[in-house]
Amino acid sequence: MFKVNENYLKLPGSYLFSNIAKKVAAFTEANPELKDRIIRLGIGDVTQPLAPAIIKALHAAVDEMGQAETFHGYAPDLGYEFLRTVIAKNDYQGRGCDIAADEIFVSDGAKCDCSNIQEIFSEDSKIAVCDPVYPVYVDSNVMAGRAGDWNPQTEMFSNVIYMPCTRENHFSPEFPKETPDLIYLCYPNNPTGATLTKAQLQGWVDYANRVGAVILYDAAYEAYISEEDVPHTIYECDGARTCAIEFRSFSKNAGFTGVRLGFTVIPKELKSGDVSLHSLWARRHGTKYNGAPYIIQKAGEAVYSPEGKAQLREQVAYYMKNARVIYEGLKSAGYTVSGGVNAPYIWLKTPEGMNSWEFFDHLLETANVVGTPGSGFGPSGEGYFRLTAFGTYEKTVEAIERIKRM
Ligand code: MLT
Image 1: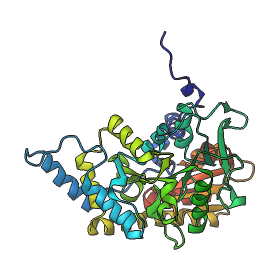
Image 2: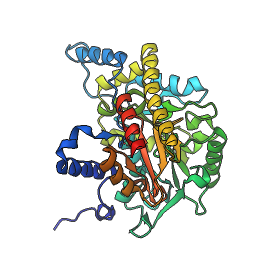
Image 3: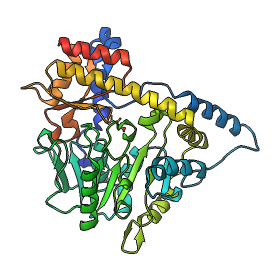
C-alpha cells in the first residue's frame, strides 16, 4: 500500500481561515434570514476594485496576447525584467537599499513563497516564530517534518521556538534562549498590527549575523506604514544582505488577492559556506514554478507608474480610515486595542471571562460580525481577537456600531 506524508497528519484541524469559513457557513445555514446581515472582518481580503491604472495595463496586455507579434508564452523563470527593474528601483534603490533587479524573484504571491522557502534549508533546521503568528510559517514546516509533534495541551509543536508577543512586551519578541537557524519575522505584523523600529530591526539583523541564522522577513503590509521610524524593508538595516530574505505581496498594497502577484528578494551575499541561497532558490523556482502570467506582471508594473502610485495611495488611505473607525470605536466602547496605525489589522483584548473562540461566537451571534480569534494564530494569541480594515467603509462603520451596542 502506498504511504502518505505522515507529517501532514500532525497538523491540527484545518487551516485557520478555512475553519472560520466553515463556522460562518454553518451559522448562515442555521440562520438563513441573517445571511445578508453578516459583515466579514475576518480574513484580510481586500474589497476595493483594482485601480484604473492597473485595469488599463491589464486590458493592454490582454490585447497584446491576441496578436502574434506581441504574444507571450512562458514567462522568464525569475520574472520579466521590466517588472524586476521597477521593483528594485522603487522599493529598494529609491530607499537607499542596495538591491539589484536580479536579486528579485517574481511569483504569484507571498503566501506560496514564504511557505516554500523552507525547502532550500536543511531538514534539521530549527525555526523560530513569533507567537501569535501567520499560520503558514508553522504549517509549512510541519508538512516538511521540521516542527516535531503537536502538543494539544500547550498548542505548540515540540521542535519550534515560539517567541511570545503580548501586551507585556509591546508585541515585540525577545531574542530566543535557544539559537534558531531560521527566524520568521513579519512587520508590520500580522496579526497584531505591531511594528519594530529601525533600531529594533537592526538588533535582529545583528543577532542573526552573530548566530548564523537567516531572517525570513515578510513585509506584505509595508504600504500601510504611516510612522517615521518604521523600516519599509529589512534591507534598510546594515548587514541584512548577509542574513535576510524578504517577501513582498501585491495583494494588500494593490488589491491583487484575486489576481496573484508577489516577489521574494534574496541578496547574492546570503550564503551557507560557499552555497548561495540565491542560486538554490533560482534552481527551485526554475524547476517547480511556471512564472506569473505576463498579463499580471504588466499589471504589477502599473503599480509603480505615477498614476498607479497616486491611485493606490488613495486605496491604502481608504482602508486606513476603516482602521481608525475600528480602533477608535472599540476604544470608546471600552476595549483594549492596538495595531491599526501602520497595519490594516486591529488587535483587541477579548472581554474578561471570554476566550478568543467564545468571543468569535458571541460576535457572530450577537452582532453578526466575523473576526479572527487570536488563539488561531498561536497560544499567546489566546484572549485576543483580530479585525481587519479591508472591508468597505459603510460595513466597517456598521460593524463597529453593532459591536458598541453589544
Ligand atoms: C490574513 O487574513 O491573515 C491574510 O489574509 C492571509 C493571507 O494573506 O494569506
